[in-house]
Amino acid sequence: MTLTAYVQAGTLDGYLSRSCYAVARDLARMGYRIRPFTPGNQPLTVSPDTPVKGCTACVKAIYERTFNRPYPNVDIPAPLKPFARRKVWQTTLGALRAQERAQPRSTRDVFVKPLIDPKAFKGGPFDHRAPELMYHPDDYPILAQERIRFGPELRIFVGPRGVQAQPSLLDRQHRELIPHARAMYHAWKDRAPKAYVMDIAWTYHTLARQPALVEVNSILTAGNLDDTRNPGELTLAAWKSYVHYAEHGRFR
Image 1 (tube, one colour):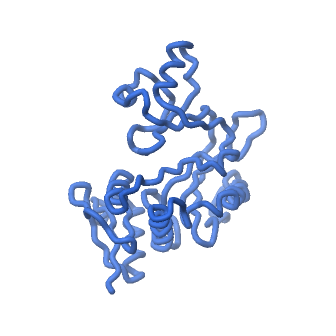
Image 2 (cartoon, helix red, strand yellow):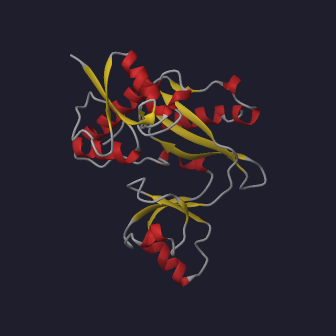
Image 3 (cartoon, helix red, strand yellow):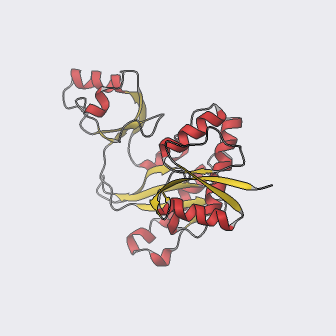
């Protein structure tokens, strides 16, 4: 049986990004037939054995057509909230709009992101006058976060064998984040996808710096996979976990 993978096409060596190119090349090495696609020429559906790599909008659309389930947007999963080092809560745009009307400027330190569709609008400080928010109804669900200051972020790839990191290639500040990344991995290990991305950083919200989880991203849509040794393996592991989520309502 011929193995097939869909990877989004673009202008970088025929693919959308270096990340997509690295995945396509590695999956081809593993025996997969690579079928490039574009936003205007997507597969209607794919099989559970056919991984998809591309932008969030395309992967989300293909996944939801295939499995008739919402594409999971993990961002800051519940077991990792203590590592966020900031208040994180689910609410609606209407709730924040009402708060701003009652107490002007009281929401200026709230950072908001879409809860369901990660690309509905770009995350940023809440502004009730912002055009990208004005068109969404009051009951639109969002993930709200306390605004804090982060240092330079470190992107950590997690695969079936745990945290992937090459400390020798990092500066001291980022090397010191690796043990904290492993602690985050173990805290979510039993409920997490087999492969995913964590962005972490030092935060200076308090007098002493603290390691903080910025957000979790999906391997299926994330960049920088060209920095890993096994982009094909990571993509396959992530896809299988997302298929399991569609079929059973949980990752693994």
